[in-house]
Every structure is written in C-alpha cells, then in structure tokens.
Length: 171
Image (cartoon, rainbow, N blue to C red; front, side):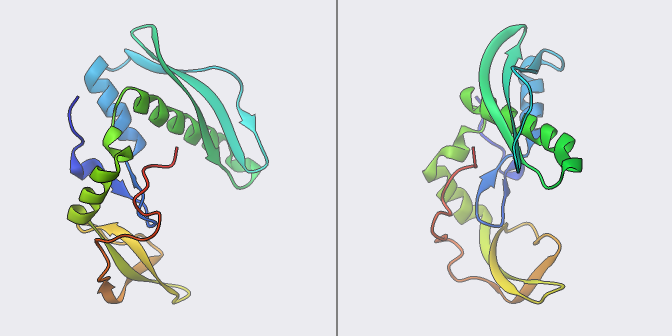
C-alpha cells in the first residue's frame, strides 16, 4: 500500500482531515483498472427528514470486497438526487477504509504530525457579516469564500489544535 500523497489531503475548517472522493476513485482505478471495480447498491435509498442513506457493496473483478452504508444530509426535496450521489461517495470512502486505503486519516499520530507540518489555524472574517472566527486551513491554501484572512492572521495555537481537532474523518 502506498502512503498518502500529502498534496491529496484536504482539511475542513473544523480541523478534520479528509481525502476527496475522486481521490478514492483514482486509487481504485490505479489498483484494479477502470471498470474493474464498482459500487453495487444493496437496497433502496432511504430518505429521512434531513438525511439519505443507502447500503452499497464494493465489488472488484466480480467479487464482493466490502460493504458500507453511506449517508448524506440534504436541504429541500429538490436536493435529494444530489444527496443520493453524496451518499454513494460516503459509502465508497467507508468501503475503501476496509481495504486500508487512506487509513492514515484515522491514525491520531499521523493527524497530529500532518497538521503540524501542513496546516495552521487562522483568523478569518466573513466578507458579508464581518464576523470573525478561527478556522483550520492548509498552509499552502486560502480560506474559502465567504471568508477572507482577517487581520491577526495565523493563530499562535496553530499546531496545538482545538478540542476534538485531532479526530479522523467523519464516518
């Protein structure tokens, strides 16, 4: 198993590290070949009040490899198809975890070292409301709209993290 490429790892504003869904697909394509793997639904899409879920099986070369339930929040009935795709992506990430793909993202030591080397906590300002808050970002990145770097910039506690900041991806 190849280690994660640090340039592939992204960070949410709350400090959670994750690998974008397309990266899992590329890893599977490199490992098994395009078209040699797929996600097979194992039941209907379950639509709750604010979340959709569905069970999927990862099949490689015609063989069952892993199974996971994906989930995704949605806001409004017109977003259910998009949430269904997000649910599939979430199931793919969970199935890949069973194969050890991107397993570093669940390793607290890796998370601490990655954050110390590649990330920092910065003060940002909402461009519309002017509200300021701290967010995590990669050192080689910028905060996403609607935020901009606030005066004060990088926090002095950038390597220590906040409570819960060392947790792995949400599964």
